[in-house]
Length: 115
Image (cartoon, rainbow, N blue to C red):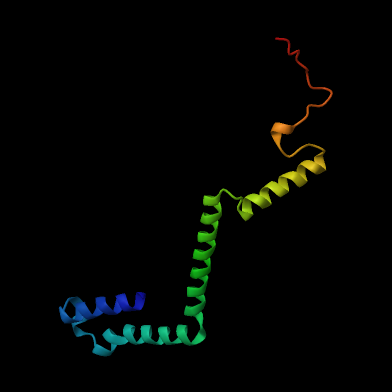
């Protein structure tokens, strides 16, 4: 795409006879278009363009799937991985993973709950 933009700019400058571009050969002015055509041919034949399109489609699918899971109120894979890692960490430390379920040790002050 940049070569097409450069080609258009050179073409406009040549046709408007602006500055030094007025004296340039037409081969030089039209060369960026030829380079762009060669690039597109290479990108298509090597499969590079198709791979990029497939990667974009996969990213869109993953985002759509993530949004659907979020809309349903289900944990996403990342959230699930994080919660599993926290549980594993807490298990290793001998604590509960849920801070609301945490038990206080023997050193923790106890309050009398008299009403």
